[in-house]
Length: 441
Length: 129
Image (tube, rainbow over the protein chains, first blue to last red):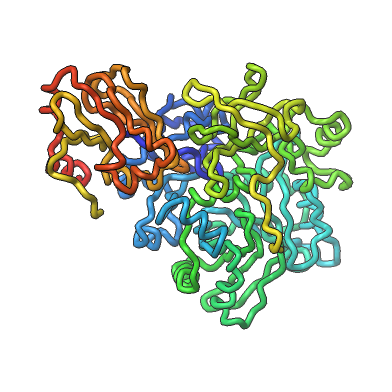
């Protein structure tokens, strides 16, 4: 038996950080085998710098169980020992050795949907932007507004927003959340595999803006507490002394040995918060989350949870080949802003209409589960391939997303997904696959 | 890891088991270790009865939520029966990997191939190592 793990979360494409900056680097097959033996030709990263083709995204896991054999280029989070003690199955992901599951993807998924779970998200990146204008002005805000799609100027202190970093042709470099801490000071949370690229891209465009831009990714351990009972966990963590911030807001809490940042955000579609703390206190906060009743949950459940909600995964569903409008993320783009990188193309695309859209696809007959990279057909014509795919634990069927020509994007459109040479019936459905329950916020 | 490895079966290093208790027709499944690694199966794709396979060929696929595993035919021969109950209840493989979760029965074309399979101690050594 050879087990192949499908792509499981943000930007698996790059075995080590920095790859993206050196697409012509001398990455060899042996480098790849060190992170899990992809069953593929060794050059795929060179040909697909932004996309991870599904058939290459499988790792022979049974032979990489011994985490000690992994190369030192794979980073470990401050919570690594906790995962090992919990018996987690560890996999390489975006340059990090991460838990893919503890008890199993389905029970972890259900724990988050029905109760509360906790994920290690220490691999994600954090930047700080501080304007240095003495006599007024908002240089940090102005600079971010030139780089990001959403309007940073509408944020009140403590508020955050989902936004994107685009290239000149409106291709998506990264999706991220920006929070206004106070005054002209902003906290950014970016994807693990994109941290170095984002930082360099932004840093190269500071120009004469009077600000400080710093990468704090190594300073924080981070965890996401997610599920309908998240607030009860928060109350236990802080003994009821602090109020959980409102949705998409942050709060900073002074602790020993340092400030803890709590943001009411997540990637599961459930209520929850993300907690960023000094590295030295990471294990202690993790254990407090477990003691407060949160089930440890891995990247596998994180991926099924986000896919059921149609939250895009950068490196799979988002890439420089597609714009936010094609990805259905127009809500995070403010074209009323006078200018930002990528705006011209988006203005034209909005006027002309997009030719492709990222749609939600659900299998409608008994079939092997959909996987990233499987081809999608209609009327015997190949239309594209799944950018994400998997079994939905909530629905009990295969679900996925793909960029399809707009004439095939309407809910109800009949499709076929090809799996190992056979085609199975599927259809376009309305996003998300799993709507929020009526009593949710 | 505390895994069950019955003494009366033959094994492959790729985590298939073979039960030879019915002449030249043997039963094949995946081991307890394999099902623990995969966790809950959500789909099992089995070969058509009548098809022939060489030892080492990909003969079936078992899938969990986020992984697909190829099953290799431990011996050469012709498929005579598959466990069709797995179509509706793939997780039976997790519940009962050596009994109700069997995958298929195959008629041996070369019974001597059984001698090259691992015994329980030999298989245990591969997963402990």
